[in-house]
Length: 211
Image (cartoon, rainbow, N blue to C red; front, side, top):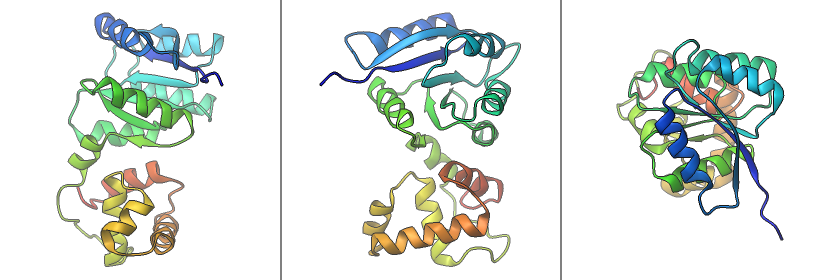
């Protein structure tokens, strides 16, 4: 059975990095096809009208129109678009803004190519995929609770969700059943009025839970 090819667009203003990433993705692999490249958010939006990729690798910091604005505009026009943010920044504000803009994942520009490949595969399948290193940097301090929205157990589970753990992994770590963890997660989503994990991570950062 032939491997399904994932059609990718790479958006970055640094030509050397952009072309190097394209080469690494396509060299010796039948899984990925880079259908086009763009050097700015404006060029990205123009090309998006001509040929729609399954996954977009989007640099955050670019001239003319940065990745945050480009992602916001693209998501408003195409709700199903799947964008992975690329960044060398360590500032929390960029991650939060990209999540709010609609990014489905994050990758550091110095990530191992296998991590890049796995992230693309997961996002192409409809999953959210955030770099473990990035999430860990956002959730390393004890939570500063501003109110009584979440219970102590829910705060604990929220922290582990922000670390990227699955329900099964959280259940194993906390000695709970997977069903119990899933119920807690549903309660957290309901209390915070978040739709998915990406929104939940953004909510946690905005409200100083674990940041």
